[in-house]
Length: 469
Image (cartoon, rainbow, N blue to C red):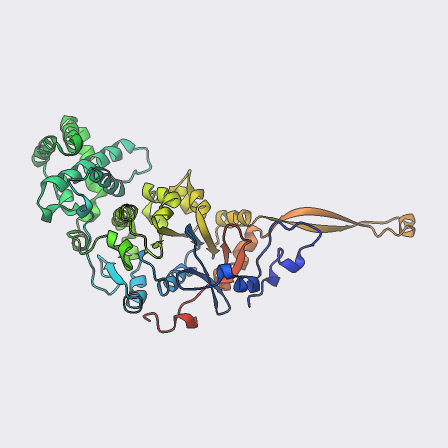
């Protein structure tokens, strides 16, 4: 069993029973014995007490905050080697697919799909064309195309919003135009990018052509009219912005995964399926927009598909901050659980969340059914964890001098008072839950915090024979 008796305070035997204890640790023995945290397949594996797995599942999301190189992927892999529900996983180095795909396909009998443009996983890549979801006969396609444009065009944060907003509007209209006028083989983002990079004369003809496209109540025509009417310099700057932000599409790797579709995202909710989105670490900064595109369209598909799966579709969002701000994820953090989706963002520190979700970063924590914390070395995160754990009422005894007459009256010179003290200070959080300790804090609303071990799949007997070495 884990020995939390060495913790500085908040362990049950150390609490003065005369003081109402508002916070404290759940001892590992109690965690291991609790039916709320008893492991069974279908729950997410949170950790372990000895070799006893700790599991939990509710209809809320999960958040992991763990420092760099602290073993975040080990916990993800442990769950992929067990969770029988559908999964969409960002796979930064292809290791999730490399280690878990065979088990999920052969043992869990799932359909397993790997989108791996750069071949990092060792598995043959499939392909998915997000524009295949745009149906010219359905009005929702206007909003869906807007989400595609939103995923591709990102504000630069330097106050140049006019150009990015205008580029997004241009891309929105152009996506709809391609989806409604081009032959099926060209209805993809690759062709959209080709049109953007046309010479000036061809672009002028393209905008005239768009002005004559009256689909969706003039949504395309308005963009064509607007671009044709803009001064040449302004039009050129807008086009340049759109070209710059879609430059990652000019790549044989992207062509392999975007030209056509070998599956539909709705199928992930209808039957057990695992989708791995693989990108090497060196391509994350340049090709993260591709991940944004797939995730935006996946959330649309999960919301519209009314099939109710036995278990929620788990979105494993490793390296979550690399995605930047995503309005769809921001909304999903509070709403998508009702559509049988469970988000699992994984970040290194609180400042990453604050940077992209300035006014709503606490939504990710407040809407989570489980938060995990370990290997946190930065003060901002450690301070937040310290506040999250709360304060404990402790008894303080002060010694003082006693006069001779006081001694004669039986006085001992001691005074007692009650004070509030952090269950753990920020420094203690970084020390007791450092990467090397193998410990983590688990916080579940309605329960006192737990300190349990982190599961290491390649040493735990539960996972023997399940993973690829």
